[in-house]
Length: 383
Image 1: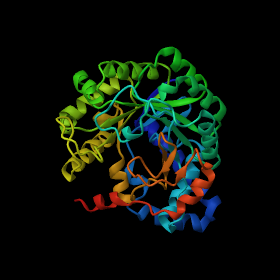
Image 2 (image 1 turned 90 degrees about the horizontal axis):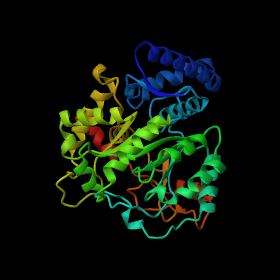
Image 3 (image 1 turned 180 degrees about the vertical axis):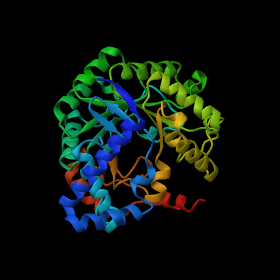
Image 4 (image 1 turned 120 degrees about the horizontal axis):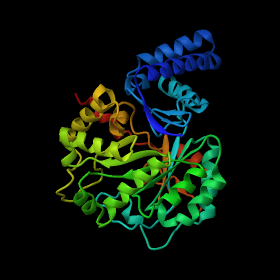
């Protein structure tokens, strides 16, 4: 099994089959005339997913991925997700949760400059493994298709990760490890792949060793990330890079160089972020601004659509997606912090409940009472 990019005629074939499957699933769901009506209405809405397609997919084994957060596009779960999306956009139906970021560790060997949950870090783990497993199984019952094991640094609980994957493995769920690459070696990757890990998300904000080590405040951070990306690729895991775009990468040439560097290491996707909730004086990062937002939109769009990028990792920018739809935190995904607090996203302090004190099913039922943030809708007004 190999992980590779699918472009050109082969991608068009996959797209044709996908459209065919969507159409017949729509007929089954709404009836013949209803399917035409709903799909026509959806296609005219500026929020529809057809307006945000890239010129390539990522193939892992027999599965094809458009973005990491969704199920494989050739799976029945992708079609189920699409039908729900049409109902959300056309009729303001309730959006189903698609993924959960679950912090399994309170500890971290680094002290990243922009870390959004450093205030929760401690020398001891706060959530018992039994509660983590119970929570993940509860999320699976809710229909969530992707579970991201995060932290702190999840590898701080290495001995318990295999147990989580083994006890929670099922047909629908894709498991991912959000990591700095710390202490990941080939033996561990072989085991993780064998017991069901789909991919890794590795933080990597520059191709400059000095900058990476400075951001993470760790002398081995760069080498750990490089090693983890290479080994993950060798073991046929999907490699996603989480990249906070700083002053250096706002430059078009530097951005291209970084994407090429990550591609040579083995990355398939690059999630691009701008610093949020970041008010410190920094020689590496700018505070969030409209100008920086526009630059990242331009850089990621070129990467997704221009032919000369088709052999490189697909860059994605969640802020642009949310500019059309509003924040998807608490709607499309939830975040469970190292203290066990269930939140709409990492940047909102309001909690729906705590998994140490309450069952996740009760917490999710309670979340409908909360007002969800729609801040990023304001970005849609930018010309």
